Image 1: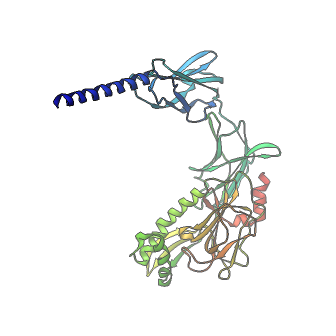
Image 2 (image 1 turned 180 degrees about the vertical axis):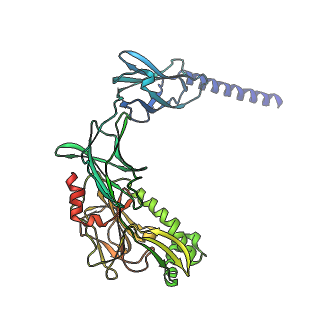
Image 3 (image 1 turned 135 degrees about the vertical axis):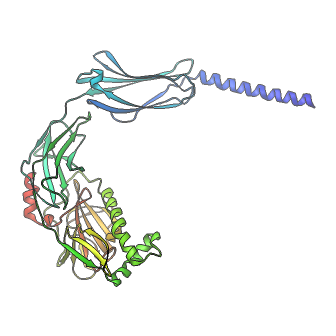
Length: 439
């Protein structure tokens, strides 16, 4: 019996050895070539460009990798690597190409990538991509040298660039507002709406036009402007027990950690943390906008409605004499009859329709090229995401959802998710002088 067991063990060892040997030689004798993939477009390279390349070989594994730039039949090595250990199936190279260090000149070139494997046949793949070396930064030609902007208002400019832009827009201090390139009088012109916050200062605020070309070259230019200071109201709001009791169920239903909290604690959380969360949601929703002007003429103001709160109002909230927090009102509250019909202020596309924290049931409309409007505290919504709406088309009814003390509409205008004074967009003269005339 022992001999039988020994024979079985030897047989198993022989089979395993044969199998491993077969796998080894099969691996070594394979003829499949490695795969090379560029992880992004590198049609143009400026002074410096980061590139990513993925090398893959699923059989014998990667053995040799190289990246070089060829210009005027001369090779400029970027990376070279030998992998002695077999079995490395994938390698991602993240390289920085510095054209100045490589002494490349402006003009056409080829980036050549190669990979060989561990097969006895040394299977090799070569991938060549045509590129343009371009170290000349774009120039900016601002078409609107005179700009008067209201504190808390909207700015708008047009400008041309000496070459096509991969990314362009305006920085207001460190906040970026994307620009959009369209044809005006059959010539490509970039235009951008941007927001100047209610806390902005004419002496400290910097507005900078920015452009980056396909090669990664960047240029900035300071925008001349005059900031018109505005005086915003301040007020202390005494929160009644009735109001605090009213908001508790709605916010506890959507925020389970508020269960068991006092009405004052619920309000403090909603006014601070939930308000910040809602702002982030709005900026995310408004991060993309259709590259086309959809709006036409002055924005519609809610009919037969009285303003109950204005843009920029600074509020300090009190309950039983104790401070519960403060806020800056970033829209206009308009009150009419309860359940009043709410209409789209201008033409656009619905990009949000649903619950939105402090705004209750809300709708956001994209009017094109970074311009949006928001309708909050609705009792019901009569539209859906993706719908194209026309000015005066009904989208819902007013209500008191969210952080509302009574039935009204909260109306806001945003640039890329940043709030601006809606009053400007109700004024056809302001639109003509500050937007249309610049087109």
